[in-house]
Image 1 (cartoon, rainbow, N blue to C red):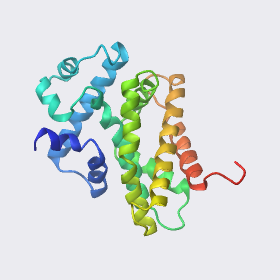
Image 2: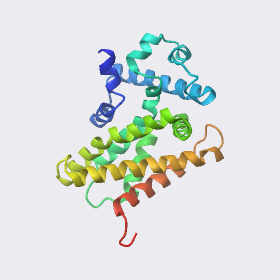
Image 3: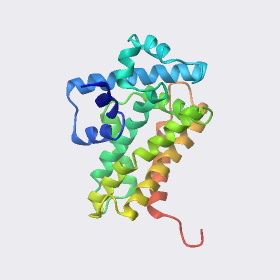
Image 4: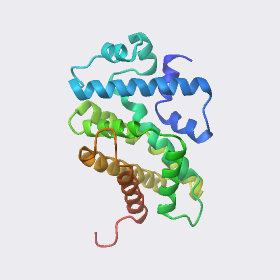
Length: 227
């Protein structure tokens, strides 16, 4: 697999991969390396700032060559993408299994159960929240965050299309997908903004699921007349 193919798995293809089931060992190893690179990038961005951090420094911190790192990511900013796509893959998987009559609370409970069953480490969430906080002060990371939201709307639209029977490119389906993505990202930003109040390395997962429940519920209800 060449560098271009590897980088695509950090985008929508990653969501598709997770929906298909457990990835092969080779893919899991690559995913682990991507996450390690993402960790190092966020650590350096936090301590030095994005502008003062080089691709060489990120590669050295992980113990690989710059050339190898470039096979995974085209820019230093894109190194953080795995921290963003992992959570969305879980949301997409659960939404794809949504059965008629299920409530938003049931969906969020399934997300929490999936997160627990997957053995997600609290450090992953802590690092993701750190990254999201950085997007408030680092314009280049804010651009990555906004591009992430835009690029993954089609993945949510496909899930909605499967649930409703409408085409994924139907305008209403696209709008609903955009609303869901925006709501989830707003919830993540809210939790990240208040995460400084929790002990280091101990993110408040209850706060995350509460915010996620509120985000999905609000997205489902839409604005009431007069608002």
